[in-house]
Image (cartoon, rainbow, N blue to C red; front, top):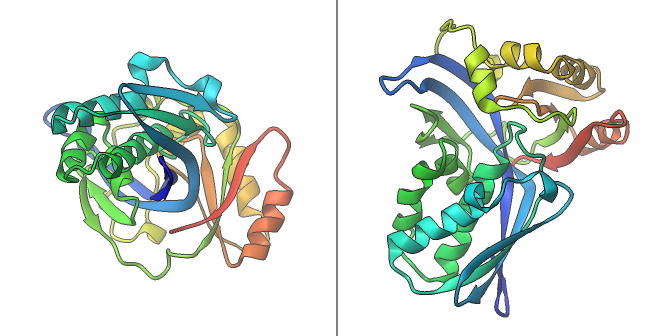
Length: 273
C-alpha cells in the first residue's frame, strides 16, 4: 500500500495457479479443487481518494473489456465493505486495467481484493470485514486478498500459506493469445475424471487445460512456444486459461523470450512474489 497526500495506491497482482487439480463436485454443485496459488509482482493498479460517495472508473488498455457497474467487482467490493463495516465515508476509485479480462490470472478477483485492502486502510477499519466479504465476491478473492503463495482447497477458498524457496523471485513470463475464455464454459467441458491429489506443484497438473485447449486451440500454440524458449524451466496454463506462463532460470532468458513473443499475443515479463 502506498499513500501520497490524499491518494491511496494498491497493486492487484496477477494470480497464477502453479497446479490445479479438479477432484470432483461439492454438495452445492461447485467443483472441488486443490491448487497452489502464486502471485506476480505486477498486475492491475488501483488508486483511491476520499469522497462523500462511492464511484469507480476504469482506464488502461483493457478497460473497454470490463463489465458495467452492476457487475463491476471493484464497486461490488467497495459497497460490500462499506455495508459490512458501517462506515459513512466514500471513495473515488480508479482502476488501471493492465491484465486481460477472462484470462485465468484472477484479474477481476485481484481487483476486488485490492479494493478491499485499499479501503480498509483508507477508512481505517478492521481487516476482518474484508476477510468476511472476500468469499462472497468470488472463489479466488480470498487468495487474492492475501496475494501470498498458498494452497487452496474446497472451491479454492480454504487456504493454507505455503513456504517454498522455489517460488519467490523466480522470473516468469505470462502469455495470452488475446482470446477471452469463460471460466464456466471451461468447467462445463471438464471430463469429470479425478486424476488424484495434488502433492507438489511441479509434478502436478492443470486438469482444466484439455477442456480449455478444446475451446481455444491457440493455448496449445502458446504452451508449445513457451516450452521452446532457452532457459525455460516450467510451463503451464493458469486457472481456466487462456493465459499460460513459463518460469525461467534467469531474468535474461525471460526477457529474451518476451522480446520474441509472437505478434498479436499479450505478454507480461515479471517476477513471482
